[in-house]
Image (cartoon, rainbow, N blue to C red; front, side, top):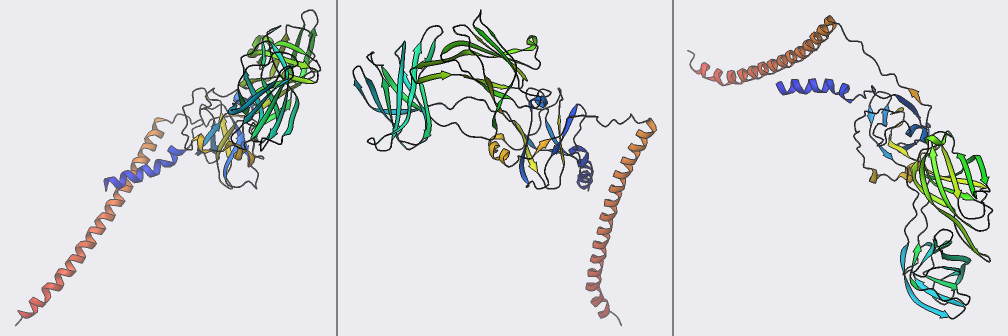
Length: 436
């Protein structure tokens, strides 16, 4: 009976335990889900403005139903902008025609997709045109690119450009021709192929708005400041377009939450270049960074000659999401901005979620405007209220206990009555035989 009483008291308190305590959370947004949204996993995108008001570990982001119940959810972070690593290909043969070209035949071992080749060499100080063809049988070949270029130069800044891209194809054999033009042939150590970059709805490309674009002829430098917009997602790469024919420049990207350079931090430092030989061209005009929530970005191109004009700045962003199980007819809110939040209970492991598929089926799911969270404030009860509440709780528990005791007593009386009836049936025949 004591166990039953304890169980009932626990069940009565389950609702209070399961409710979400919003005290400590400063803000929330309503999650807008269209009426025709199918039940199941949905993902709500989180923009950079929201993430800037969250903990770096994102453990203060919560999904809560309007009845106050926390909803199990998983945060899928913005993906990095790193490229797929090339896979090695088997070099079948290398033939040279002195003073003209070097032919390299490679076998990918299967008809797998590739979008470019990396020529591995230890040769230094060269610029070579490259032609790329593809074949399925090693005899008939089809042109993939005729104006490729590889280079290794040390002035004005070190540049090593050994990859050549081409349209994605699944030819098993790749024929590479390096045009030597009366120069010593390169020492080829191996060849690797780049797989195509995966397409995902979580990655988007946008043109950043240029708010400052000035060139300094005396220092051969270009400074460009762009605004990624108030509503934006974490940026993972930057790229530029320019009309400059040939150049090698040092590049630095800095980002911040305001146009004031004092608040900015360095995001990337490296080299941008465009190397040409007749119609062939090799270039690097993009930079990959860790996901950044900054709104303003400054790019500096310095050193070398000439001054490089910047026509456009393109940014690639990655969309982070909060994924949870949607039930038809339910409404939800997203709470955030709690510096002292404890780690949430994530019931679904991130590895079990296909973020791209969830994003594709949640295109109309969005967040409303952020609102200040006013946690329900319960004034401290007076002593009489505490006593009354305690008395009510005690009376309720005592009443439940008495009810169970009454049921147990009633049950025992029924058992005794039944036993008595059975005993009476066995005694009556004996009494009838002894009667005179």
